[in-house]
Length: 186
Image (cartoon, rainbow, N blue to C red; front, side, top):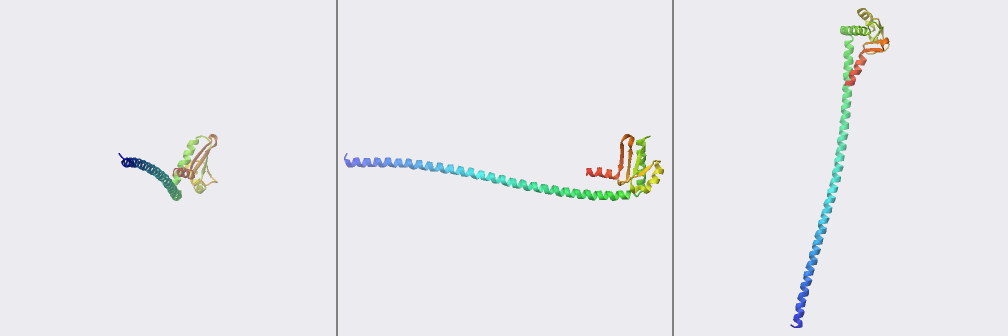
């Protein structure tokens, strides 16, 4: 074999080695690029998911805040309606009580409550108060019940109040007290 042939064989061999080494380097570079690309995609995906979660949390907070504000607004509206209804109801009840106080039934009610107060007192001294608006009924009530009545200086809306001092008992059958008790349940 001659030098020329040896040179050709050597050249082919070196070209083959260079080609295989360059192929290996290209393959290695390609794998490196694909690995970097995959890592980049994963990091971008994680970043996007994180941003999505942050945005979702922000939106949920805004929604909760709006729901809370609306709930508070509706509660206030409901409370205002309830207060208005309560006021109208109490005004109507007051009108009906005023009408009732002009009837014979009211006179009978007072008589029954005065007798009840006397029964509770028994032999003890009792002071029975009637409302100032019922002062015109005092004489008739005293005749019907045989009790000594006192016209109160305080307006308690009708009914009676009685005091048994010896036992520290207050019998409060006044309409103001009864209305206050009912109003607390509304």
